[in-house]
Image 1: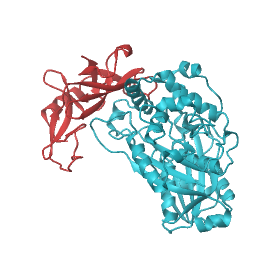
Image 2: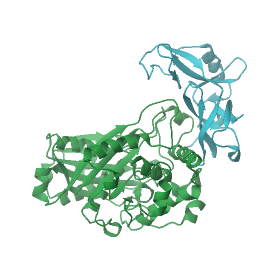
Image 3: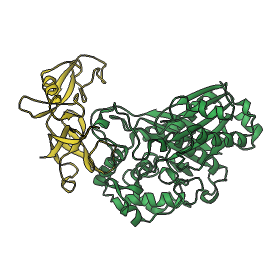
Length: 379
Length: 145
């Protein structure tokens, strides 16, 4: 594989756009990424579009708005990992030498469902018994609390940190701080989670232009490199599973670290999949940022806050920036690239050189999660 | 799915006033007691729930229909306050670990403050929601022993 770089990023503020079509939500992010890249729009060899619930031909609907069609457009559905999986496909296409310049876009419009929990696949037997995503994570949380003595209030501090960061991010869906008392007093969703323990639903889009190193260095002196790109799926069992350990993410993290030749100690900034408060803590452990059972200590030490050694979710994460499912992976990648380029603004992680993005999810019976995609970036 | 005597009983239940939300998963025996319908691979003995058409361990399609154990241990749970239409909220949802390495998601029939991790549970039946016309829907549930 040859070296792959990111030369353009685009992101719209996440939020609720019920009056816009999917294409109207998507094209501004694509245009921004192309303009930023400096390459002629017609030089884009292929498009990979991630969307979980956007429907047929999401990528074509977005691209035709800009009059950019005719190239290969591949639509990728992989639940919460849709656009990060699209990025992985794009990385392979450029890395293998098949293409030189590829566009990645993640786009989602969840307001079309009118709110509430994410619609799940009714053919799934657990869904027939009342499974909803908050309950799945809540059961992880309950078991983790049982095994490690974590309290619901300690768990709520993840949300406080997320909103501290999100309040500084003009692209975040929820740009306000919340106190731990507000977190705990909000309405119950799935015990031990109140509303503030859960990511909001909404709409959003993000895009990246990636290119071979040859093309990239004609545009930028020191482009951000993609040093690891991987996608894994959960391991099926209808039997017992340790729900306090994010097996899928841990497996993906090991692969990604090996590919990039780095370890957890080298990561300066990370965007990880905090769909619910417990997720962030479990992923600290899966990524090796701390030992098993010690995630809360890491959080409360301030190490994962802005100014800490390993800042996690400076954008506000899914909890605050928002989680329009298929757009999330691309938005995380945009965030990390801008962090490494030193242009994240008020939520900049000073001196960040190595960052990772992690999108995982998909409630499916018998699997930890459906999919997990991890990218590591360096400059 | 292969017809079995338990499924015939279940079809009768489906014609009664209340219906199971997922009739493939549960049946009533001759005494009206609920039984979870699983599968056991005749080649490698792997147990499946729901009953698999093809063994996820060895790919054999020679799967025997079996009744799963009636008692297990609660692995974890949540009290669900927000759910799609049709469910009666709040409801308690949990994973119950049965013998033979089977974990079953189920509604729990117990007050929220009486539910604890690792408590022993027994299979039961309860109304868990309603269909679009408002008719009650049954499912298997687990009740503290």
